[in-house]
Amino acid sequence: MRHFTTLLRNELWRLFINPSTYIAAFLFLLIMGFLFQLILLDYAGDPKEDNPSITFFNLFFVPVFFMVPLLTMRSIAEERAAGTIETLMTTPVTATEVILSKFCAGYIYYGVLWAFTASFHILFYSFVQEDSLFDPYPIIGGYAYIAVSGTLFLSLGIFASSLTRSQLVAGIVSFSLVFGFIVVGSFLDELALPWANQPQWIELLANHTDVLQHMRDFSSGVIDTRAIVLYSSCSMAFLFLSILILEYREGAC
Amino acid sequence: MEPTEHTIEVENLYKRYGKLEAVAGISFGVKKGQIVGFLGPNGAGKSTTMRILTGYTQASSGIARICGFPVACHPHEIKRRIGYMPENNPLPLELRVREYLKCRARLKELPLRHRGKRVDEVMERCDLTRARDRIIGKLSKGFRQRVGIADAILAHPEVIIMDEPTIGLDPHQVIMIRDLIASLKGKMSVIISSHILPEIEMTCDQVMIINGGKIVGQGTPNELRETFIDSTIYELEINGDLADLRESLRRVAANLEVAQFAEADERGFSKVTIRIPGNHDYGEMLFSCLSDNPLIRARSLRKREAPLEDVFLAATRRSWETLDTELASNSDDADSENAPKEVPAES
Image (tube, rainbow over all chains, first blue to last red):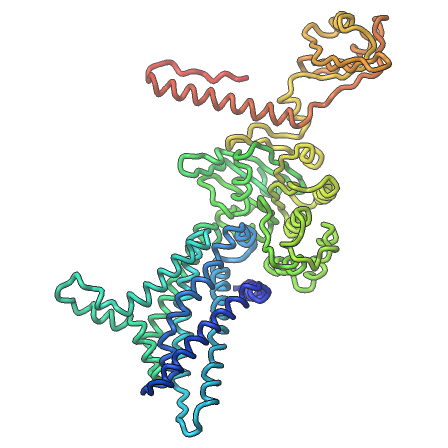
């Protein structure tokens, strides 16, 4: 792992000097800001039980659907299309270092984007009535969930990008994988219709893969280790697969 | 082949893409400090061979060794010993020249204390100092090409592999690159492929002509000339009649042929090209024959070295002919199993 820091620094530097990074961040914050404002407008008209921050976190999949493919589709596919992967893989770096540096750079960017949304909550709580109760735990839980699930979503994106040399294909595959994981995972029991009487294990599995339920748990302050294990093990599996694909296609060990 | 003697050894290398044989049994060795040129038409297997040597592509069978290490088993050992510049010279377009080279120096494991100095040194050598803080994407083709070359020589590699390094450069830059490559002679083993044949001839100790995945000619440019060019060519400037010239030259060689006879200039001299089959020195005989004939006055006589281009064309044509005969004989075999096997005619 000698070259990991060099590669990571290079990846981060390239993100830093690229104007599209800032455009993407701006649009992300704009959309998230609109969402938050809509939620607040909704709350202003019709009082609700839940904290608006919780409702905000329950919509986390909206930015994930478009941000994750856009963030990760470039990583390997772009290098392959430009040919720079050839100069990279003929230096003494390993495929593991390359994949992990791409993943970490993407993860850091993803984390920074979400960190900016913390300002919404800060603004919100600085303007609410003084006697209202401030409960930080749903916010902490919500961001913890974003951090844990981010590892999986980004590794799905990196995996999709390592499959192909076309960024478009990588983006579509990545979107399908993320969409599949969130939607199919959340509604697995409803989707398993062909079985007239559902076997027991489908229900058990569906309990584990319910992404929306995980978010609700985390944002109500329940840190569920089963979800953490699921996300981290799946993300490691997909990163491992990406490393294998890169080794196979670009001949590095 | 002694591993100590050769820095690059290739034995019976094959690379198949499905039914297509991109490399079909190539064997060669490159000594330390030698500069070897790969010549061949497009799709001959030059780039594939180079990629196998760098460990980027895996061979289907055969052994490639760099500094005694087999490429397939020790990819890391060989990657520390090579500098590679791929075809089309891919570069990250958003970085600055110095930034890029510094990052490459770190990846190539140059020690920290030499890094900055070495980067400045290669920029100086490749005439990039003026462009050090410019963005690679905004550079002209010649500058980009030199960034690629600077990257290849950056970490003092023992073996440098460059796929068409002088493509798209202007004559000044070509001369600079040629001098640069020539200055590596004796220190590093260099393999370059190029379509610019005079380039190869001027810089390379050894030339390998590849066609259809096979080596069809190998040796120094002079050796190749002797193998593939079977006639001697002279250029003369004479004042006289063509018939008289033919008459007097008949004594030199019976099968002498006047290939070209240009119009006479204002002083009555015309340029004549004559071709004599076989590789011999006819210079003295030509002089004596010409001076014996009072009707002909000669102004100059010069032996013309066949350009490498002719060697290249002859070698590839010959290999294609062999290939065609083989294909023809194979299809004949398929048509009639019992028919006697056709022997491919050697040209």
